[in-house]
Structure formats: structure tokens, C-alpha cells
Length: 637
Image (cartoon, rainbow, N blue to C red; front, side):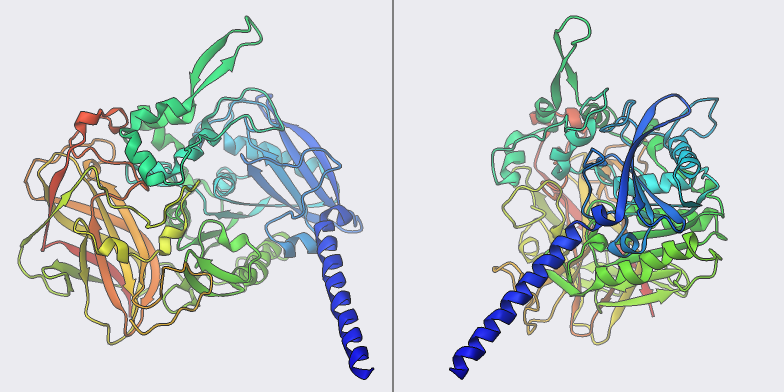
């Protein structure tokens, strides 16, 4: 009887616990609705275009609150004042302590009027009523502080990816009420972020093109775009079978129904795809879309916190260059940098376990950032005294090798040293140069090096940034160079420059450089979610990688062919890292010429515009790397 009673009581306890957790989850799901009122408004810009904004205001009206604004091309959904988001604001802490949270559809997107321009160009010297994203932000903030009740006159902006770009935009010619901005994974220059990397096209983003380039001229609360169907789970084979880029044109043509006049249909091109195809070089179109060129116009009254992930496949260049640009032009501004072990937007998630792909970095990293860094930043400048001195460091960065946070007074840290290693024979990465010997490999246009060993299709690739690179190291068209086993820790902090000396039998080639941490053979798996075919034993973790389209080796504006078989300098800049190669590990460099289908195939025969190349232009070539090539690291002693 006693045993039965114990079992019965234990069952009641378990049921009560489950009920309690369920009720708690339901309470969390209705938190916004229970604690906020929602209002939808149309805000008129200086040129007469009306933008849609959704305003969440705390129900407690006994005090005033700052306004946190996110401008987005991704929609303010759900639409309707009786429909609520489950989460609002940059993080749950800022949501629960009370802020006025505003979302706005940018010009030409969703419920806002106007015509969308993907990364609309900034207009430096505007005439009356001339508008761009800076004026749209200014006019929005001006309306909000004058019309939203119970605001304290201070505004902060934030966003990740495209919304991160709009947060950067908010700081240019900023409204006086803007006191704090946190551009996160922000696009900086469209020829080096997202869809381009140093002139190479990110073919793996093919399906995302229509999201930004499908024509729309009327407000809508429903998606007006559709994504191409690949009808396969093998994207490598899909793109290989498709051949030249021009064969993808069929996916970016739409029927526009002219209902106003005749009811006839006319075929129109995806305007973003057309822009990419017609502008293969870094010309005036791409230069005008860059925002980092205008960071000299960030006033000292706006505090900035730039946030990024060391393994962000989409926007790594942007946040690093945004932080450095503000430091360069406005050294007296309050400007901080936070970089952690995250992929795109990973810092905003609620998962306790922090992994990128197969690689595990620790627990509660994102949650601690939200509570101890992001919330403190906004509160200090929007609710506190807003003085330049705060409790936050200038640079709060995560060492992805030691798996620990560090704080510095500058980024890169002061006292860095440059150290070069040379690509020597016998797969050795040497501290000394050993002649100028040729190392050759065949770049077969029909068997390009894959960027991942996974067989799947992805909307935007992410996990490859920490992927095990053993599959590539074992190919004959990937050159491998590595140190001996390290006898002490070796920390890289800052950018990396590969100074390649190369030649090719053709007239065009891409050059890809990867920096890899080779783990000891006796390591055991520490991540139960790791793919079953992968082991941490001898894991070849990719720390950083980058491509340079060889035609742009001297100028991104003026491309030029290679002279066949002529030794040529090609310098590939890799973005910053903060990684300790621990004692017992090895530092490895891989050099290759294809990376498919992360980037498109180079014909390896020079053509003026690769987007218009024919099948006959694609040819297998033999490439040479000379052993006086070197890799220059920024080393933290």
C-alpha cells in the first residue's frame, strides 16, 4: 500500500510539473498580447510615400519608455491590430522590462508604398523632398517621437542582416532623438557581402534572389514572390547539370499582369537578378549601394554596438568593416564591437547549446549576450545617463579555439605582430621560404571541388563555416600545407592575407584559401548532435576561408585576364579571426580553385561577363602555385 501511495504521489507530482510547464509556455506565448497594446499606422515620408509601421506600447502608462525601432524588408507581420507577435524587440529581457517596440516595412516592401530598391543608394546632397533610406528613417523617427504617447524622446535602432543594414543607415545624418544603434550582421558593401565575395557570385544563394527582386508596386500583406524549385536534393549536381549561369535566366522571368490598361501580360525580369547579370564588375551601381563609404556622417550623439558572428556565412565583411569605418572616421564616438561563436543571427536565439554545424562552443552564450551585453547597451543610452563611459568593453570577442570571451580596448587588439608562413613542398607550412618551386594541380571543370560533403539543397548555406575539411584535403586538386604539431598555443587576432604566386594554362581562375585547425587524433566527440559520419578525432575545422575572382586581382573595377603560364601575384584578404590553435593541434592551409556550388564556376577562359558565358568557354586548366607564396597572419603574443 505504501509503495502504491508513493507511486501515486510521484505520478501526481510529474503531472503537476508537466501542467505547470505547459501553463508557463502558454503564458510566454501570450506575453506580448497580455502586456502590450498594438497599433498600425501609415507614416508619410517627405516625398509623400506612406510607410506601414506596427507599434507595440506597454499597457502600463504610468511611466515613459524609449522607442526601439526595426526597419525591415521582411515584413511587420502579423498584420491586424488584433494579431500579436509572440516575441518583440531585440531580446526577451528588453521586451519584459518595457520598451515601445516599432517595426516598419521599408519602402516598397509588404504594406508600405513605393518601389523597392535592394540596398538603395544613399544620396549625399539631397534636394527638397528627395528621399532615400536615411530620410525615411529620419522621417519615421520624427513622427514616432511626436505622435507615440508615453515615449521618453530617445530612440534606438537594431536589426540583423538586412534590418542590420537599415540600423547602420539610421546612423547616417541621424535624427537628434536617435541615441543608440546596434547594426548586427549588417551588410556593408554589396560587392563583398551576401551575394558577392570579392567578385565571385554566391551561386548557393540562387534561390534567395527572387525574395529581393520580384516586382511589386502595391502594398500587400501576402507574399508576392515565389522561390525556384530545384526538384532535387542534390544541389551540386543540379548546378553542374545547368551549366553556364545564363541558363538560370529562366528562373527569374515573371508574367506581369497589366490590369490597369489592357489586361495583357508582359514578361519582366527579376530586377535584382538583372542588376547582378548586367553589372559583373565593381562599377558605379555597386559602389553607390555601399554604406560603409559614408560612416564619416555618424554623429557623436549616436552610440553604436556592432554585433557579428565569427562563422557568419552571409555577413562577416559588413559588421567588421562597419566597426572599423566608424573607428576610422569618428574615433571619438562611442563605438563597440561584439563578435561571438555564431552563424548568421545566432546571438538572437534562445537555445542553450551553442553550435555551428557540427562544432560545439559552449552553453548559454547567446542568452548571456542578450542579458549582459545587448540589454545593458540599450538601457544605458536609452534609459540611463547615456554618458560615454559604460560598463561594456570596447571589443568583446570570443576566442573560437579556447572557447572563451576576451575584452580589449581596441579591435584588433593593440600590440599585434605580423608573421608569415610559406607554402613549401611536401605539404609543409614553413616559417621560412624554401625557394620558388612549382606545385601543380588540374582544375577539372567537370569535377569542381565541393564546399561541403553534404548531399542536400539549402536556401542559404551556413554550417560549412566550421565543417570538417578532410574530404577536401584528400582531393588532388586541393593543395594542403600544414605545420608540425604545435608545442604551444598560437593565437590569431585580426585579418589574414594570402600572398599567392600563381600561374595557369588558361586566362582566368578563382583562388580560394582556407585556414584550418587540425585537431589531435585522441579527441572524443563532445557534441551528441554531430553528424554520425564525423568524428572530432583529427577534425579539420575550417576557421576562415575566402575567394578572390582572379580577374579582380589588381582592380575590382577593371578586370583583366591572366597571361597563360606567367607567374602572377594574387593577394587574397581573409576576414578577421580570433582563434587560438591550441598546443597539440596543427595549423593547416588549403588552396584550391573551385568551391562548388558555394560560388559559381569560373570558365577558366577569360570572358568579359561570366554571367553571359557560353558552354564552350568553360575549359579544364592546369594551375600552378609557387612555394614563395606566403600567408601573413596577425598574431597575438
